[in-house]
Image 1: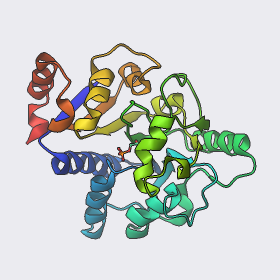
Image 2: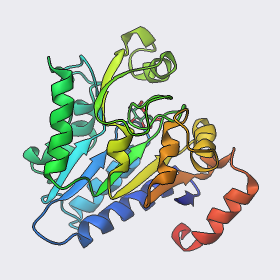
Image 3: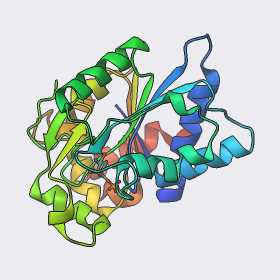
Image 4: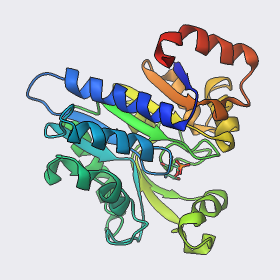
Length: 262
Ligand code: GLP
């Protein structure tokens, strides 16, 4: 696992956007580049930087197919807290990606199991995901895979914990009851099947989760720890999130990634 520590949130986002752009630009052949994407506040700066690069002609999304991580069950697309809305508002509406290349789980489906099975099939039909960008919750959830979700889980229906509903209530008038109780989410196995995984971890409130992901054992208690078994996982983080790492770990990653901090 690589851990790329950047001084602050802006630099972390810039690093991640540069990395993604380089991968897309290096991609050759007829097959599209398949990119997995998250929502949340962590990736917003990355989306802004990717939009800037697209406008500046440094990258195009015309041959990129995207799969989003998750969606609240029961929220229509037009709801301003649906992940469909978030993605269009923050990213898709501002870049040159063809609408038919965008895949987001349908939170209004009357057949959730079928919707999730079809999502997995569609990912497979493209030959899998080249790069999955993710973020994590304070409890280490990756997509909506809460603690104790199987580390080999596939796309499916997930019940949200009370803690997650409380954390996410900041977007729902601070009322946890207004946060949907269920979501559709890719599984941990879906994410770790990707050729590369790049997870953003920033802020003091993610310090415990970062330490568990990097230094803890692989455990379903911290579903993000499954990244330790991935052959090409990168964590991009800021200094603030490093507060619970041991000094040794912190120094080790600064040392071996020093070129990447420039
Ligand atoms: C939600 C999403 C996750 C995201 C997490 C963290 O729960 N389902 O995919 O990683 O929030 O969000 P933030 O980046 O706002 O801390």
